[in-house]
Length: 327
Image (cartoon, rainbow, N blue to C red; front, side):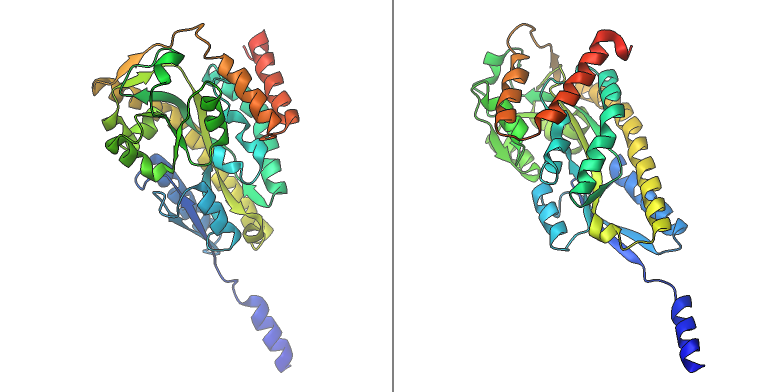
């Protein structure tokens, strides 16, 4: 009888709470952090406290590579990782980062509807659970000199994110040797003259104060910025299936809402940049800019940075859209 009572008491004892430690480069107070914290509160409430999230914002845990290393050794359980950073897990996850690959957000939407699930499946096969992709807008070249043609860019000191193979290769393909720095060192690099040109969304430039060190924005989308919240599958599988479903639902909803919010914020941020005297300059067409795509794609395919199969899928959807399928 005593043994039966003990077993019953163990069965009725509530499961210990699982706390996920999540790192992100997003500064505290941004819409990203507010949305993530709100989602975490909902998860805690709906799981009766069994699942909690603790965030480390502002890049305090290092760049994407450092965050992923800390996840693998168990110091962290997940992170908000950029498209380029996802390549450390699953190379094809960076496929949207090719320069000049998208002409508009409508084109992005058409492609992502068809390809996002493939990328999430690829991440899970590599031991990470993703909850959908959220965009950070298009990156634009920003500099102290107006950049309208390739020759304008060549004498400049261009920053690329540390570990971003696609951006590095893209600039190298046109004879530019970029400066690779972690995100946290970019403002200092602009202040000291180590770099004088960055690629960023309007929102990102303002949030990180880079806009205070540049005078011009080249008003043609360069690279599509995106990321996702990923957690270690090993940690995620500690949860009971109903709690897993709650986490997937809530953070899937959060990332979808951030997509909408990001577009609204980007419109306002562009207005702010113009009000603060940033000059918006057009890109001269027919100057070889779009040849960058072909040369970059060729080099990256040769290096097997991503699979030829996934590149083919991307190109097919883009071609379908431009042929009228998405209009």
